[in-house]
Length: 279
Image (cartoon, rainbow, N blue to C red):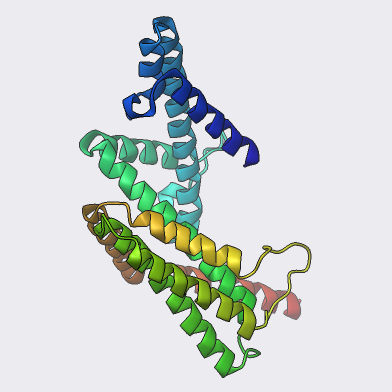
């Protein structure tokens, strides 16, 4: 991660040394920068590298998505033919073909900006849920944590989320004032401080755990939600519609299929145990 950060900073510094920052092209910064300094031959190398990078990412995504859906199909939440593994190649060929066709159709009929915003929202949303779950896991144990501490934890988490959302909203709607963001940042700070001072960790990591609890997870929630505030409202509507469709599918199809599959496996295991016991 440190190497990546340093590399990006060096690239940004190099770009600003080649061309004034207010003249940098947002769509093709290095290509235009090389062209501006008279190095036209270099822009073809940059274009080739960008094309190679995009194809590599697309290929990696298709391969990863195919394996995701293979596992999902094995839990009966997706059509079972997606879980078939090709005997010759040992890979989920069917799932790979299906996901490739689906990605091509979506990419062909959808604007790149829309797809980028949807991916950004989904990624930031997941990155916000992970530290939230980490706080719950570290400060709450079912059956052991007192109700008073549980209610305090819920209150602190709600305030952290609301203050993070508020900072993002104020930043998006206010152009000339920082007052709303400062107030929300203050609420976030004192809420996290209260969580740190009034609640004890219910679980201690055995080998390695996230340091600076609860500041680091709380800051992660605030930063991710704040960045989400820079995305347009139409993208949130699309994300909500997609999420609602998937949730309805899970409740009507996936949940029942998973339950039936688990019962079937449990029944087979019980029968096998009974036969072995009789024998």
